[in-house]
Length: 360
Image (cartoon, rainbow, N blue to C red):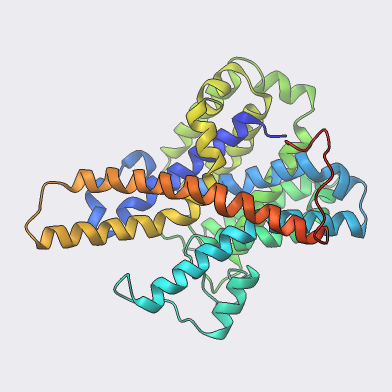
């Protein structure tokens, strides 16, 4: 069952990453929005959300009552969710490189890169590169899925405090590494395990947040009318700190919890129709938008060469509209249908039996 405010939060995070990436293409440099200059941290929010939501859906079956069959079903469900779109986007980006659409081939289409991308293990620190740029984070989440029973077992044990300290310590280590591109935590290099550790730390924070969700003290602080606005204000203040990335990420589990409790303020911002719709297509937004941006930039450059200037804003609006249309279609045709196809194969070609929870 979907939690509307958490779905909307995912949508806001995906759009934040999109707006952050627009000026990364030099043609759109003038459209940089200061508010989103550190929206690379929305990826860390994805990691935390993933740990929380997966625990919401699978903790009882996979971690609390573990078995090889339940663990296998869990992994198939996760692959059915993330692999079909990852595969399609990777194939499209591969064709883009082969046709040299972007004007420069920066990623070698050699056997190690192709194999690790198909297996979704390309960003685990052994030097292979993500063919579809943003897929690095999806790759690291696959590692979190594999380790989920262990991560959840620790989060629900007496050693949860040590796991919390370790997660924060890992984030500090990543931020202090000097590898951040746009900021301390903006580490996504393929030749370091820090990229993977960044994901595992955020994922662990999400699982720990789920453990706290039913605690009375947590509800008292975050479920009331002021919980959601107070957390948003705290994150905004932390973003004013020049090197406050770790502080921001440490506040994000509170934001997830405030949305989970679904108070009036959280519903108004995150569960409205627009935010919820963006949340449904957020995975497609995250993976497709760099390609649409670069195509729009190329078209604008051609237009400039023909003397058509002064229309740059329309190219950006057209890019946003095209991204939405592509991602809406991608969600229904690739994500939903791909999930159904893999589940059908898992059942040996048999139709799923109707259940009360089928819609969820």
